[in-house]
Length: 119
Image (cartoon, rainbow, N blue to C red; front, side, top):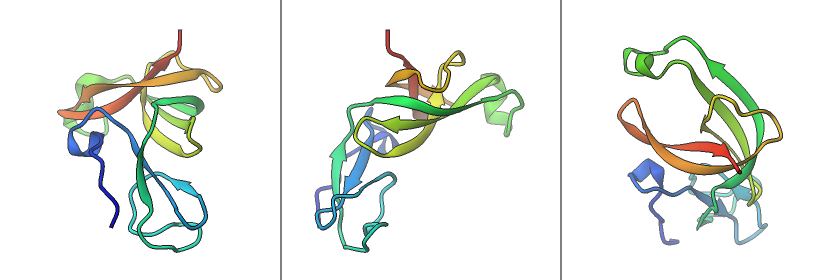
């Protein structure tokens, strides 16, 4: 069993992905197996937090009472520098192709990755 690194899902300011020792595939989110080849126990690795915006969607209607104070907020798909894609929050002015870096913010009472444009 590989070491399990703490990430934002466990309250740490970090993004963790997995890499398969058998085929090298990188995946995000945690699984007990490689989604590409089925090998057991992919290794946890810490991401740099750098990436490129693949898609963006501005949310203008609260999904829950807890998110009402956050509207409008931006949901992104980010292609991480390490080669996986993840969904996260981001600054409202971001566009497809923007280079971004992850910071961490509270959203509806939870710590979440929040991407901002690299300056």
